[in-house]
Image 1 (tube, one colour):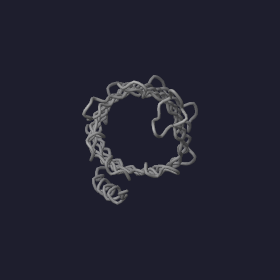
Image 2 (cartoon, rainbow, N blue to C red):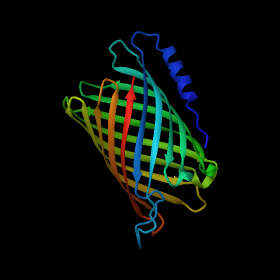
Image 3 (cartoon, rainbow, N blue to C red):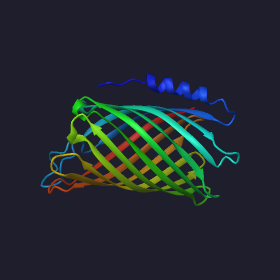
Image 4 (cartoon, one colour):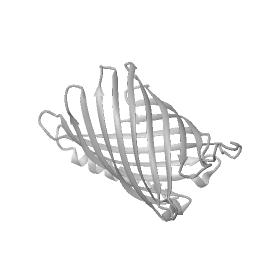
Length: 259
């Protein structure tokens, strides 16, 4: 499996060089997360769940984020980001993977409570199953309403196109979601969400999948720059082929830092 954090550190230095304006900033973020996946092989629920495989895995990630205002009122920002991540499985290590990602876009404050963000991205993914190695591009649009000082709601639209070494793993996908954020305490953040995604795979016979997901995420600030994170997601997956529907659950906990 190919993976190298060096490009991330190089771009972090480039972002730091760009931050010559007194208003421009660069944030460096990193984290580690441990997760438990109840159905890593996507085995159908019927006629039996006996073939569903469970495994735990760890994920390391790092990213550099550059942002700067584009107007005097500081209601419009340019955002650039480069990140890398790697996942290592405890039992089924043929699923180990890594990725490099870059993105750029605009944030716009629309009113006292409404804001919008549009980001385009490019990525490369590497696995031990080289047929699944892929690269591609995508875009995400977010519309957010700050309902109160401690509650916000956000709608998300996403599109992605991925080309793999083996064409049957290539696909295009779109998704939409709705998130509710809540700050019950000064240093405690909760995020509740629902998403629906569709993927169209480039197989000889059309193969289309649909995934519905409910999730909750929590973050607790431990000190100025350190955070404890946790999450739970429940997913329902289906396709245009009979007998392939399955469910999955992922529980995770992690530690992250931001400077």
